Image (cartoon, rainbow, N blue to C red; front, side, top):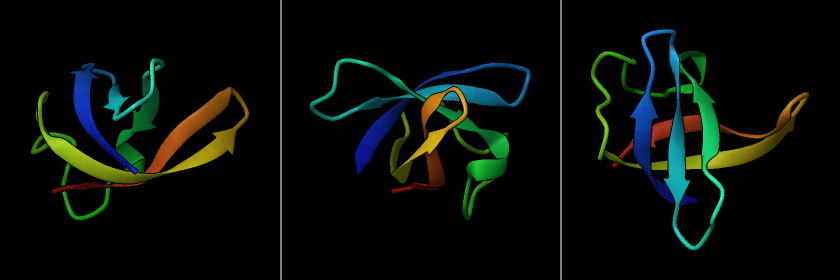
Length: 65
């Protein structure tokens, strides 16, 4: 899927706004691929996979486009 980094926290996680979806998707810094949490910025376009976690859907394998 495609989306945009909407928010980042100082605690190592953030949210992605997804193309065509109303609800934002959680991501954790450990789920980034090819980029560090410090390098990724709000507004960056990303690709990712959606997986079901214990607290609902989240993004895995997040890559900056």
